[in-house]
Image 1 (cartoon, helix red, strand yellow):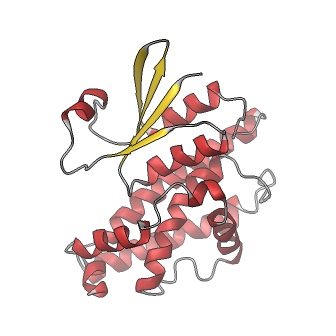
Image 2 (image 1 turned 135 degrees about the horizontal axis):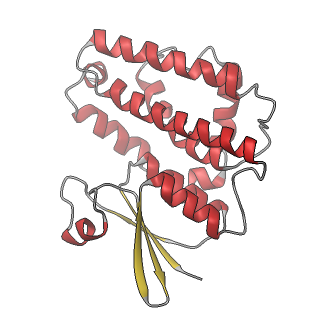
Length: 223
């Protein structure tokens, strides 16, 4: 069996996806967190885009680097005896569609905490509210969706919800508050051991510090 090393940043939500997937599949791996503001030379040699996550696969005496989280997740699906996507092609396609939706949410969340003004912050808040409402009305009510499963869809949404553990301490932005089904799903994902193990115990404090250091509308609220 190949030896796996996950190269990450301590706050990276995309690396959390990989960690959750590996843990759910029962695959042992080593994790190395790097400083993206001071990237080591060896990392730049294995990451053509200079981004995390990267999965290094040691196999038959050779080292292979896989980058981009979607590609890494697909590789793990193909080599694992424990698939996390549906065996039905149509349902699998729908799961992948919502996985892409989760990626768009991460981009929107970055825009939210980076908003330079209160006006921009409110615009991003409204945008997030509309998208999360689609989870409530479209995803969680879909005929193919089961809230009893923990698959790849859940693995990618768990890091999305984790941001709100910190956002909720700053203010009630009203993004998730009215969404009962989404709130229940969020709690269930947060209780999954693989999700809890995907970050360090000091993750909330580290994220809080990261947000405070940004000169944004959100950081001014925190001050």
